[in-house]
Length: 110
Length: 114
Image (tube, rainbow over all chains, first blue to last red; front, top):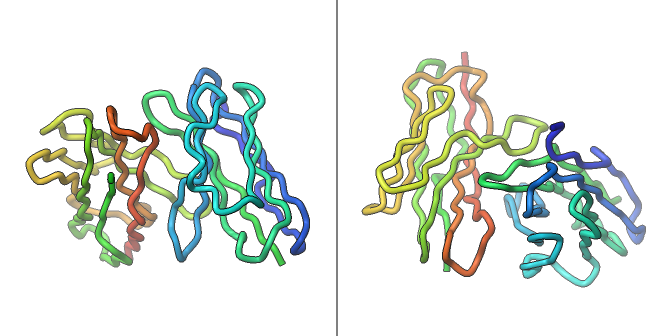
């Protein structure tokens, strides 16, 4: 398996634009997580899914953020409209007995 | 609630020095601790884990023992190398608690100088 695949690796966008981050989990993993990493706040859990159903989205910062998992092999995290303070590295992880992380998407909102 | 507290960094060591990064936690249910490592520009990778009290996890010369009585899972390595320079995260998965996710500490940045 190629591991957890995230795209794009880097995204630079202007404030106010919509941003969509994508994740393909490892086949067979039932749980999927979205994390955000910044220097100030470290690694924060945004949302996690179990069997494609959102279980805990209490970490989603505000209504501008939304996440979907239409099937077991794909998830998206959308920010609309984006703001400079959303600049961070966003990680997706999937889990069976342990969590495997993707390489992250570095988002810069200017 | 559940939480993980780990030693703040950054930590700077010379090659072949001894490393300890402390990690303690609070949890209800049946916690299971992990250490993850993040090399520059990459995602987190599992370094080692323990599944029950007094278990010792080990990998790449790193070790950590799950001490239930002190709710700790300190990371140690007897002789660090430059290639160990990375950020280390202590994490906890709490079975039987209200969360099924991993809870991470804030990370400890390790720099090893030749």
